[in-house]
Length: 468
Image (tube, rainbow, N blue to C red; front, side):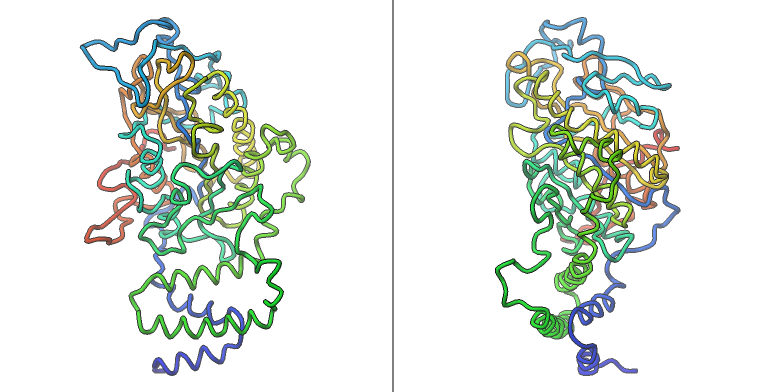
């Protein structure tokens, strides 16, 4: 059958009203959507990323340094005439952590008393102990850790994964972002951007604590003139217009992305209520995540929602701890003992519960759980009891599918000031995530601005030492 433009419009016209035309338009274009089978067998099918917004202090959480205790209160002098600088302050004296340290698990991993719940799970984790960022400014460093580039405009990791693999279900997005109830992270919605990829790969933002967690899913309550019949007629007309527009502009991905977004939104209207409804979860599960405790309620609810989402086919879920700005996050310039302990207490139990829950349900076998931040903190004090930004070293950890449990890679110097051995970067971090999903990070590319762009830029190696 020869499909002329006239024949195609006539065929679409006979499909009836509603979303069927939009669905067909999407299906006709799906070959070029970007989703392709992984080039080799993946260990992980899905990813949950826990992002500590503000720069979680490695030397107060996971990077134990006896030298900080021994030299507490002394002027920091790394020797060899090296100049010591800080981001926004004058370097103070070396400052030991206000938290107690102890070893945990068979692997003997040191964890501070700020994280009593996660400390019980170190034998399930693989640590990157010498991560490093070229920036110690929140915005650029956050972009680097989420998109692989310092400036804005580049696709986030979730968008790349959505583009490469798509969702595991037709009824849910491939990429979902769950920001803190107190506000968006640094860089706002651009933290979840699709950049130059088709717009349908951007993160679907769900505000878990809002009366309407997903905006624009239904007509406004006051729009009484919008009826099922009028919506059906409007969608039919929209389908016809979109089809005619697409035929005239075969290389325009924006329209295709918009059509696919409409189609997904229609299916999501049916799936979202059940996806976000926690009433069916047991009391024991809710208690595990700390949902009924004020301190852990928000992060606990979002961690539980993340588990429900990956069960229902979402490919990449990003859960944020802390808002952008100078407070209510991990940007602890003023008082580590009080500010970091508050941030840690909100996150610790829910994050440990998520790991426990995933493992108990068998989901950890093919789910990758990642904990990270944009940079670390300085080993010396700021204003007496705070710590300034430190791109020189920070810690991330992985757990789950394809990960060697109880392992660690890299080492910082004796003060936790600079990464010293087996240094890893955002490029290695992302290369490893893609590898576990069955993707060669060097081959996942999109031509943009005359350059074959990729999540890892022109760098990065898979951190094989933490792989099972």
